[in-house]
Picture 1 (spheres, rainbow, N blue to C red):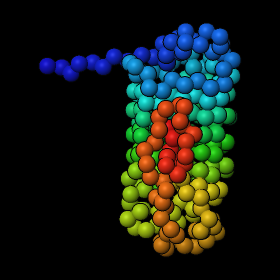
Picture 2: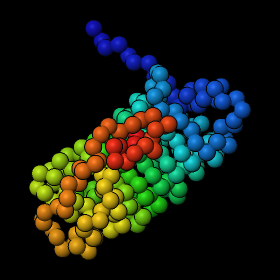
Picture 3: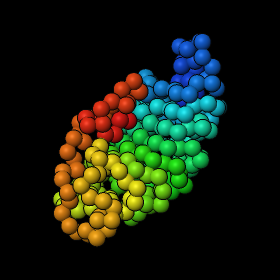
Length: 230
């Protein structure tokens, strides 16, 4: 007996519902849109998202999205955690404006498309499928990247076992200031370059444990409890 098909909706349908719930606001004027936790879940990021002319933050976490397609033209913060992403193709459509990407709890294996996003400062990518240091080298091409979360990726687990995780991140990410919710105060980038294979300073998991929140209202909660709020 075939599995019962789970009903889904498009982003266009979710935006229509949002507009009905906010009759005093025009979609093309709002700066923040929250479409997380849709029931049925969103599967397709359809074309109306590109018509959100003034939207700087889009939260579309905790749905069934498999690929990034349409995005608001001025987007600065994209929260798309807890979906079904395998690739970041088309994220370069936001290359001119994107500053923060919250994409934890997906199935992404490569950061290659992010290389175009030169303004990216914050990347929350916990619990994906990143398993090669070469993917971190790609991120090293982002001149403003200063805050990253990689907990739960195969690469994170492997380097933690070797005791080289923090050093490897600092060596490759020149502007890094916050790693997995922990401020990097014990080891400078210059020291990291010459400390290949050395022991990490301090516990990188430290206060960076806890469950990531998907609710747009609490996405900016305590980093100590949730370093990847998507």
